[in-house]
Image 1 (tube, rainbow, N blue to C red):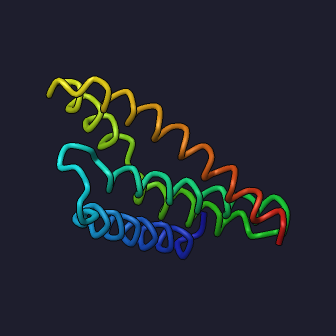
Image 2 (cartoon, helix red, strand yellow):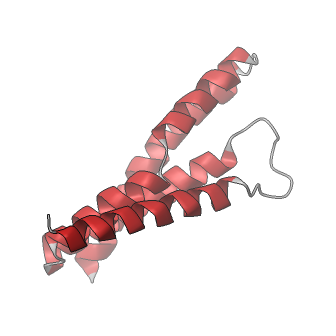
Length: 125
């Protein structure tokens, strides 16, 4: 990758990290204090964006360099597997086994569905 590509990657990663921080510092009104809603939203929306970008590259010639910068840089910094794992274990440790299972299966299922939807949207364009 060119120096300009690396710069774009770093900027996109920074933007993704800031966007995640802003979204995770927000919590829906009335949401349960124990369930990690913001992490769920971050991972699902990030999966949709990555699916969309991948679909644009597959079906519409979106440049591979841009896919690398935005997909790996922005989406990689925006989404968070580590926080998802810590949240899930934390729910289990707090005795919220059902919440932990719901978080694990719900996040994985919703993220996969969002990525598939992103691919489908790109294919339909």
